[in-house]
Length: 400
Image (cartoon, rainbow, N blue to C red; front, side):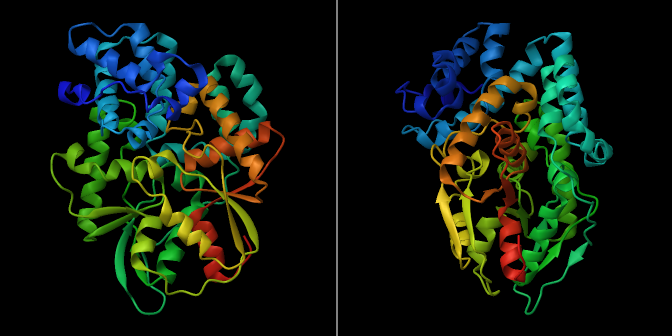
C-alpha cells in the first residue's frame, strides 16, 4: 500500500453517495475513505484482521469514488495493492478458500469454462439446491445465461469495402464462452466499418479477474501471455468489448513492467475515433443504456456508446436513474459476495424498469448476467444486448 497515495485522501466525503456498499449499509468502514483509513492503520503496523479483510473484500472495485473524488485520490491503485496484501497475509476460512479456488481455477480459463456449457441449461433449475449447499454456488447457477451455439471466428476477418485500419480483437473468457454472439457481432461491425480484424486463436484470459482480486502472480502470468500474443500478431491497436478486460489491459504497463507494443481501446471508443462509413438502417426500439463501471469510471468512456446508439435511425435512448451506482456484478463479486450483489442487482433492476425500455444495452458480460438475473427475480424479464449487437443489427439491416 503506497503511503503517498493514502495521504492524498482528505476524508472530505464526496465519495460516500457514490459508493455502493455505503449506499447499502451506511457503514463508514465500508466507504472508500473508511477503507483508506484502514489502509493507513495497516501501513502504520496494524495487522490485517478478519474484520479489516472483510471491509476490503466488501468493496466492489467499481471506481465510482475515483470519478467523484475532487482530490484525485487513486483509490483504484490503492484497493488493488491492498487486495494483494490481503491475499498474502489473511488466512481465509476453509469453505471460503474452496469457493475462491473454484472461481479462480475456472473463470480465467476459457477451455475450462467450455466444459460448463452443456450444464448451463440445467443450472437455473438447480439454483435452489445449490443455494442450500453454498450461496456462491447458488449465485453461479442463478446467473447462468442462455448460451447460444458456439461460433468459431477465423484468424482474420477482412474489411468490407475499402480497408481503413487493421486491429486486433480480444475474445475474452466469459464473453467468448457464454456470449459468442457478441464477439461475432463485434468482428462484423469492425469489418463493416472498414477494418481487417485479427483474432489470434491462441489468446486467453487478459488477467482482469485476477488483478481485481489481488492474485498478482496469476494476473501477471495471464497478462504477459496476452500481450505476447497480440505483439506477435503485429497489430498496433487491440479492440476490447468487455469493460473489465479493457480497464485492466489499459494498465498493462504497470502489470508487465513495460509498455506493451499496442494500444488498447474499447469498441465504442475505437468506433467513435474511427468515424462511421457504413450505412445505419432503422431499428425502432426504446433502449436503456447501462454504464458498466469499468467502462464509465475506470476508462472514462461514457459519451461514445451513447453517440453510437443515438446515431441509429428510429432508436430512442433512455437514461437509467442512478446510472453511476454499480449493478453488483464487479467481476467475481456476485459470486463471492452474493447477498450484497443481489441487493445491488435488485436496486439496478428497479431503476431499469422505470425507463420502460424494450431493450437493455450493456458493454460487459458480467453486468449483462447480473441485471438479467435481477430482472427475472422481479418478474420483468427484459431483452439484453451488447452495444456491438445493436450496431450489427443496424448495419446489416436485420431485426435484433
